[in-house]
Image 1 (tube, rainbow, N blue to C red):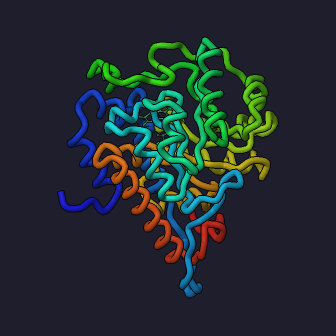
Image 2 (cartoon, rainbow, N blue to C red):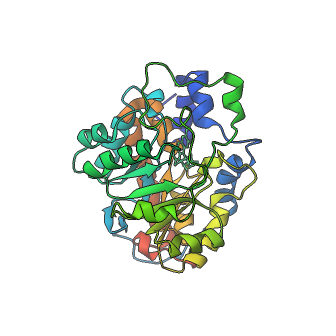
Image 3 (cartoon, rainbow, N blue to C red):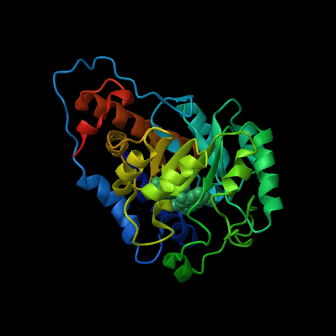
Length: 338
Ligand SMILES: Cc1cc2nc3c(=O)[nH]c(=O)nc-3n(C[C@H](O)[C@H](O)[C@H](O)COP(=O)(O)O)c2cc1C
């Protein structure tokens, strides 16, 4: 293939590079993968409403999330087992995110310890994603390591009392490659399926902003705010948990209305283009996160691949803003999308 020019090109490259075991894990969704497909289709259904004859000589893609400045409204979603995509794994992703001026959220199920990731990209902004295991001590040890190493927010994934049933994994008899060590083993240890809203108080005890990931309804958005969430992530886990739920983008407005400014609203699921980020911004998201778009870059070319995916997406956001008649993400309003 000639030089990749978009995320789809990176997806094709990744499909060529990855073995069947890894590809099933990274690409697959739950059940019939209706939600997985709909995450992408929802972006196609929405149409942008550009305003013309606006001075766009100077366009900035920069914004803030939870008070941290980021160079583009796109963060790196927590994604497990990144050394299965490339030997440098999470360290490569952390360096690429830092160089691009954005935040990486490290997964509990990462193949590099929080301390290693911090050392690989010192000075970068980083968040830690929390899965709560039945053995809470294991979770607490990981959070403590993240807190000690400058991770600045805790993102609790709320949609995973059990792992979804991912049939591509079943077909290849998915296994974590033996040479990899996982910080928090999501396949071995059971999750705490009794986790509830009250546990947000325990998490708040670490005195970092708490981000609740996996919100799809107004009801849960309100509960997250009432329990002190600094931000929520509208997410269906990339179509990997309950199949048949709405595309993230279709659930966004309901959540934005329910939150009513009390917390920041982020979104992930199906983001493959800068214009996807702009559609989410228009519907009220502060920023979006990318999972698979990042991992395709990582699989294709390690740190440089992730850097290039972020560079391409940033360019798409910048051009999209200009053609939309907006000088910055802050100028994007509800009127810019139907
Ligand atoms: C291979 C893979 C592994 C993931 N691992 C995690 C994880 O460890 N923790 C988590 O909260 N979400 C995890 N997610 C969900 C992502 O954080 C995110 O919600 C999803 O990838 C967004 O959809 P996208 O892949 O279309 O961008 C994972 C997603 C994928 C595809």
